[in-house]
Length: 115
Image (cartoon, rainbow, N blue to C red):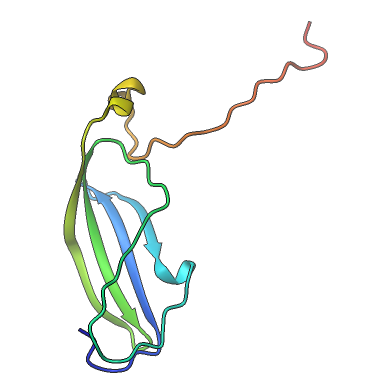
């Protein structure tokens, strides 16, 4: 519930592994300016277009900011468990230490004078 007028609204998300390493950070203002907002009830929905997390447990920190400053911050707002899947088994995700399994495009070209 928003009790007063806000000229500017921003939500920030920090995604951490259980060792406390911040895997990624996101601010709503990077892609869209939100506001002004009038008093009332609001639902905020956040979507990641692509976030290829490997299986494991992750923790989200959530912050809300207005034109005045930080309005609220929950460093351990909720946990998310990514479970093993047929892809994670097929791609051997258990053998990597990173939190993200990001696809890459690879091209191999023979050099002209390499005979």
